Image (cartoon, rainbow, N blue to C red; front, side, top):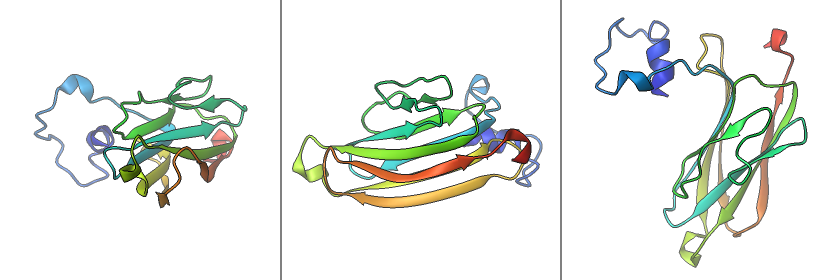
Length: 153
């Protein structure tokens, strides 16, 4: 999020020079055709983000890199990100799966954010969804994103 703000500060009406104490090496342009961000509200739960790509490949924490995209490293406490630098045309299906070592973690609320053209100065499309997961290990289809040809975006 900070990379997008720093690289497009004019669009946000911010001064040309920002006082950012973070390591400047970490601030780079991250222009992505597609970004899916998942977080949840229960520390003792692990929620798996699963994306079925238009090619039929599945990207998740067990197979975290495909010919199209990549999943962030799963550290159990979240959040998790799926990133695509150059998306191929087609439908990206989004699933989540709750893993709960204890009954306390059942009833986990997820927050899912889908962004097209993340980090670019072009118009970004955004979908935000919240959902309550009650059944551990059940795979839930959360939605899909339809990516059109590059010159139509």
